[in-house]
Amino acid sequence: MPFSASSAVEQHTGWADELAEHLPKVDALVTEDDTPVDNIFSEKQQRLLVESLYNGWAGPGEGRPFLALANVGLFYAVRQPPLVPDVLVSLDVQVPADVWVKPNRSYLMWEYGKPPDVVIEIVSNQQRGEERKLWDYAQLGIDYYVIFDPTEQLGAGALRVYGQHEGTYRPVATGTLSTVELGVVLWQGVYEGLEQTWLRWCDAAGHLLPTGAERIEQEHQRAEQEHQRAERLVAQLRALGVEPQDG
Image 1 (tube, rainbow, N blue to C red):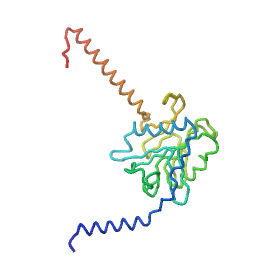
Image 2: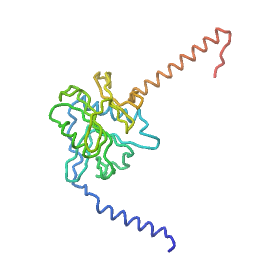
Image 3: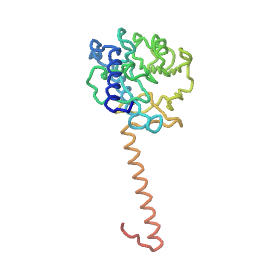
């Protein structure tokens, strides 16, 4: 039988329609409840983690996108309430073109086809259940679970990192998230006018991923260094009796 482009399209459309019939219905999902962020530090910490990825990281490899979100519902089953990590990072997916349609408003695992690779929880009190989420996140197959407890509410240290191992988590002492080519470290410094100990991303070599403001400052410093080198060269030439030519 000769190939027919129109029949191929019709067949593909039929498969797509059949698949759509079996996808979970999401109309009744509550993807936003307008619950406010619990405190100023947590809001800034979430933003620091997300924006430094987009400003300072090229991603896990050439041509591989990533998605970083803060305080967005992670839906793993239609009839179960979502988990809401403070920050999630998912490799090889990207933000959908239309973020207003219901399936794109949150992280629906069946839509993205995979769990996130990293989730981070920032402890602000003893009632948020970060310890209980160890089992939840492990069962979903999330590679890494990071707990940042800046005021040590849980009494187990400021930073704990767990890595996936056969459906459970084991501590990662170095803070290295090897499968995503990132790491996490504690950093004492100023972010948006607030000096605190912050949780920061670092690359495989241990260098901090810069924020947008830090990148601007770094570029300014490089430009200033180049200007100073040029001025020194001009002074050296003049000392030798050579007048530099403009341009």
